[in-house]
Length: 191
Image 1 (cartoon, helix red, strand yellow):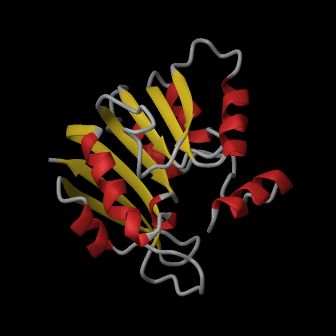
Image 2 (tube, rainbow, N blue to C red):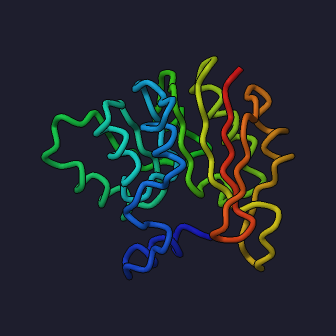
């Protein structure tokens, strides 16, 4: 989907992916039985900031990145007046994070539906950026439309592509989703 389509959906209030609810898969990693300790987090394709703000409220220092000016504006409005939260939102291309000034090392990277929307010719750059911005032990949690989704025009990501592009990571878990059918949660850990 092109940027103009995202902007149109945000403007009309029909951004169906922007539920305002943090998914249970994220909750399990952050507040489950064996939670990740707070550190630095990067939310790729952050939309209006729901998940970034959830993380910040739990002690994480978070940078949210999206290519939609409307989404970033909404995320910044949600953050306004909440000085206790260590969060910021950057308008940028997820395949050019270092050019946008995103630096340092992140302990947790969350991507809920961003990677599968990146054009195939740019996915290697996406993976390189994530690798550059993480260190050994970092966790990448990615939700993507998978190989079982057969809807025309919907991008998808296959497990073998993720394994091929994220060679510095170990794929530790794949959890098949149901909405939409064929979607999956991929948990990767940086070697």
